[in-house]
Length: 111
Length: 114
Image 1: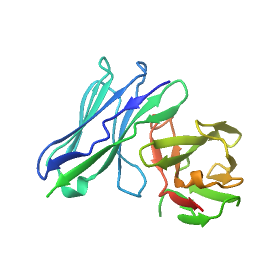
Image 2 (image 1 turned 45 degrees about the vertical axis):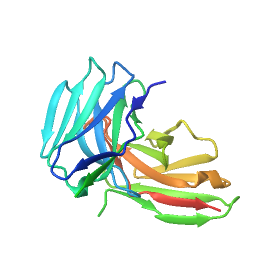
Image 3 (image 1 turned 120 degrees about the horizontal axis):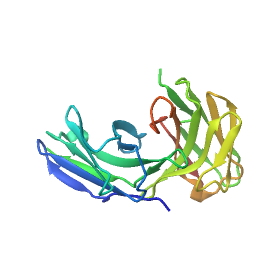
Image 4 (image 1 turned 90 degrees about the vertical axis):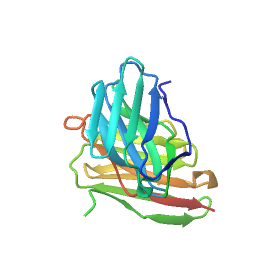
């Protein structure tokens, strides 16, 4: 069974610090990777997608992909209390055209 | 206006009742999905539809049924609700031809079965 694994946290960081969120996946042939942010009781919101090895930056967010190690990460620079949420890693399953979600990492940014 | 809408947003019902949750989208996407989310268990796929004539079971379809009335509408029914179906339900859409596997979520329906 294809899996996406994340540390459930909580990951606690002080305001202004860099938050580093990690995700591993089991399907070696996956080609598309996503980070969603979910506030408590709200729907998941796409914040980053990445398809190639290396880094992809968008504002304070950087997604990093290493297909050889089957590892995806999300860095949040200058963390703000408003970044406090659960971050879901998702991996595209090319065989079924579905997304496989991790259970999420809870991030808490302390003022 | 939101691209993906869900109704109702909150629903409290009793065991044994039939419930329908509705999802509509204006994104023009062919693919639609129903998920449920429980604390600690993440998002679990109930049913998905790749077009109006294509409906597939997800990992937890027992006790649920769906109807794809049009490209823009996908409904989820609980034939006889039970308390362990209390959860947050999300509809999502995707267009793999333009945005590989990216899914966009509706605001969710919080369902409580007493």
